[in-house]
Image 1: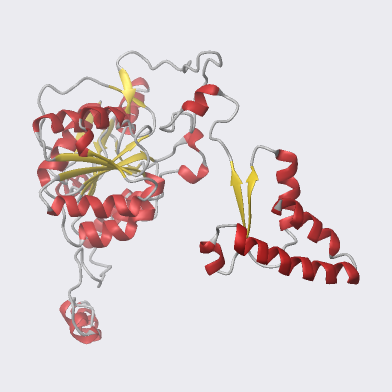
Image 2 (image 1 turned 90 degrees about the vertical axis):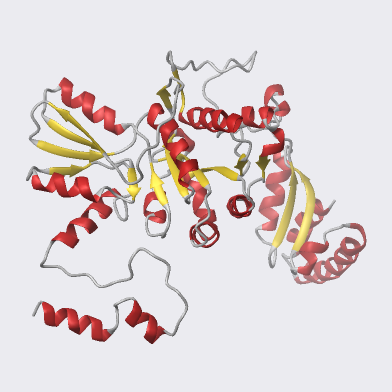
Amino acid sequence: LSQYLIILFFDLKSNKLGANVLNTLSHFRDKIKDEVIDAPLFKEFNLDYMGPVDGHDIASLIKVLQATKEHDGPIVIHVLTQKGKGYKFAEQDKVGKWHGVSPFDVVTGKSLSLLPPNEISWSQVISNTVMDLAEKDKSIVAITPAMAQGSKLLEFQKRYPDRFFDCGIAEQHAVTMACAMALGGLKPFVSIYSSFLQRAYDQVNHDMARMNVPVVIGIDRCGLVGDDGETHQGVFDIAMLRSIPNLVLSQPKDAKEAQNMIYTAFASKKPFCVRYPRGNVRYAKNKSYSLIPIGTWEKFVVGTPTQIVITYGPDVDHVINKSRENQIGLLVVNARFFKPIDEVMMKDLLKLNLPITVYETDIKMGGLSSAILEYMNTLDEKIHVLGIDDHYVCHGSVRSLRIQEGISTECLFEELEKHG
């Protein structure tokens, strides 16, 4: 009824008599709404309310939306819809399988996309590893903010229902809950899409890293995501996280390294993030796990190197294979840690005096190239930087903290005298 009343009110505003009628009817409407419609939350916020409206009646819905554009003041339109309406398989889906789909058979609802032999999704690699480790370590738990299907954690839920927690679309809560669990002796794994991790930046910073709590975050869908859409491009997490103290940030190049990286993350007892892209990768289950020394990179020599390429993730093998095909001599570096970076290897690479290209597929500002250039800057005697180092600043007066951190005006002029 309310949706038709508001359309009527809109028509009455066209003349003086209608405006007076409208005013009277508005008071009458508000009185009825207070007695009939149970919307105390909106009323407390001084918001007008209309609904519920049938979201599948397109013609009526368009009229309602057109009318509410002329509404004086904020208004909440309560629209009722059925998820997946019109297609049986989508209507029956409870976990989000039909949130985004590849080509499928309309009659059976089955996907027509077949993975290449011996390949599975990166998400499945990570999930398989967490499940394998959880089988041996009962303190490992898995947490997801409503991404159980996308992050391939449904099997974990099935195997270990008492150790799986879907907290809904609440990334902030997922991280804080994981920190509390870790402080209680558990070993949480939190799977969050890269583009959604920014919602939990405060919790990663203050609850996880500042407290130096051993939580493992799987940053799913990192980098470019293609058909997931522009808001899902996971290109900011490196720059977002690299300045946070205590945090380890990594990305494996293949499935074997991914399994070892997750194993390393749990063993490190540090705030540890492992990022991995959308898509598939060749997979074979590790028969045994190996620890990866934190902050170390790998070198791969193709032919007689005349240049150096520093990259990460699946692009490491892509660059190696392309250089072999084109018979180009390269030294390819697997920069599997963004924080900390491998300063020992960087020093050795610079001594080779070869052209260096940093190939990154995320935002450059604050990314891997920034980390490398920052390190190279410390080796250049012409440029000196005063600033707060990679740690959390303790409590104190601004004056005392400036002195303690070496960023007071006196510290600046002492530095200037050294190089004057």
